[in-house]
Length: 100
Image: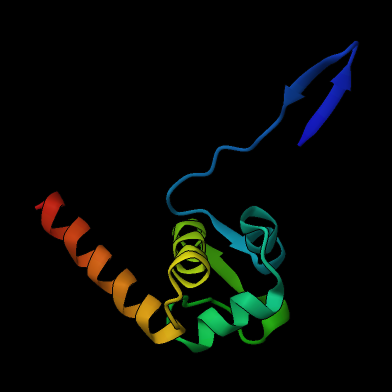
């Protein structure tokens, strides 16, 4: 968020903790995507929301990175949903191996 004050711009943000959850609207806003994009990523197995129906979905903070990566893979590299899911799974495995 920005606020204008005497010709200066001030950035205002929120720091999330690792176990925080965000709503579908927050996820869409953070990643500048539409709800339809997120529902496609959920149906493709890329995201795993908590909550019964779409209006009550909540996502982990890590979902922001997953959405941005999936969108990048699709838009810039022409990867389909299944390919993006596989790429994200492999990236997760590499990160886990590095942590060990």
